[in-house]
Length: 112
Length: 117
Image (cartoon, rainbow over all chains, first blue to last red; front, side, top):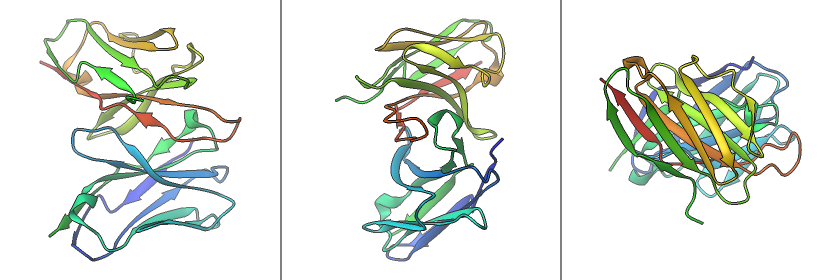
């Protein structure tokens, strides 16, 4: 089955700096890669996703890149703000929500 | 829409007691998922339903765990008897499938934090 590895497990940056979180996956048939943000006491919430037919997707300060050959994808947050502090999860699936596998999560702290 | 609603938000119980967690998915969603989140194992899929029918329960850890979805707007996850190692945050999520192989956004509830003493 799919195995998703996520690094780093914790990340601390200064407000205004960029943050990068990386994930690798094992199943070459995976074609859908969402990123979820989980704030304290809340459930995960989708912030951006990418499908295998594109290499990069951007939404304001958030971008995701995908390298299918190397089987890795990354989340980039620019101009970080304290409200970006949360746990971020990557996930991979073959296109079905029922086979989605999540990474272990990255706790991002943005220091003012 | 109020989103996915879970209850209770917190549950503290003693080993051996029955625990029932409840979920109301977003109206119109045809898939419902139960996840368990722990520090050690992260987010694990326990079971999911499609149109109220359980499709895959291979993630359910033991026979002590059971889940039902009697109608499109309600699901329960039951643990009987509960054990300390069941302590975790349990999330319900729902989604709408536009087309086969087109995974879409999972909408998570705020979770039920279970502590078994």
